[in-house]
Image (cartoon, rainbow, N blue to C red; front, side, top):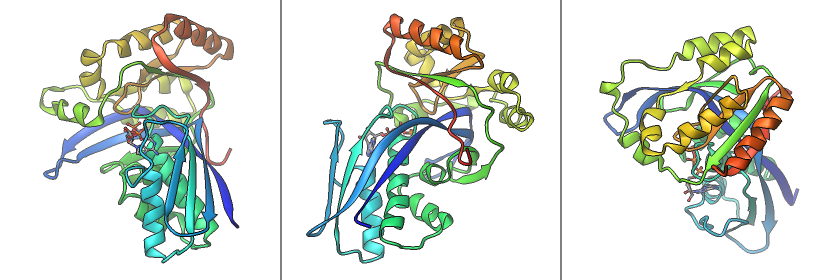
Length: 290
Ligand code: ATP
């Protein structure tokens, strides 16, 4: 096999709680991850000569060792003494620095793709053990689907697949740094945490309305006061008939859940016309065994 094409899917957080902070600065989280149908396209090719060559359609992204696809390829090439060169073409579609784990998903796709292409015979678990060295979300991006993530995000429990629905995803014009959000999260002053167990029970019962009503993201306590457009987008999605709308990850991406396709289409137009979104997608949950 001389080349392989991979889809790296983005995720949203159906519920996100932060339960504590470790001495090393990492935060303990409890969150429900859901893969959605938005993906980056990655082609990995063997090339003559040595080294790793990354190309991408977004000129502002790094193409050196600072790109997560580069790091993932290098980790495997070093460990398994792969002496063929590798070129990686990355076509981004997932919003960047937006709370959708785009970079982590790209890295996960490279781990899985290189494992196949060079017949390394690593199990999913062995790929995840390597992935977590590069980022806490990478093991989840290898697993995908509807998953409870705990620890720093790497302790994973698969859940029943999220009920099918329509998901409107809007990335506003602002950029939010994950470091800024966690630095300004004051757990001491928060007395009401998201009810993650209620969301898990709703998933288990296959109840999309109850799931939507239980969705919450503790990081909104930081991002919404700093970037009011997040609240504006949530309100607009709800006006358009969303069962509920919240921010994903550390933001600023907002998503709304709809049980009616036409209503979701109408909400898409409403958000589009508002001009509040730089990127806008109408998609559905991506489930591993679908
Ligand atoms: P998360 O949901 O895990 O917080 P995110 O959406 O905040 O992820 P990413 O889009 O994964 O963030 O990337 C954040 C930063 O990482 C970017 O500013 C970019 O410079 C760098 N980066 C490195 N590799 C990639 C990649 N393959 N795709 C996107 N960004 C990358």
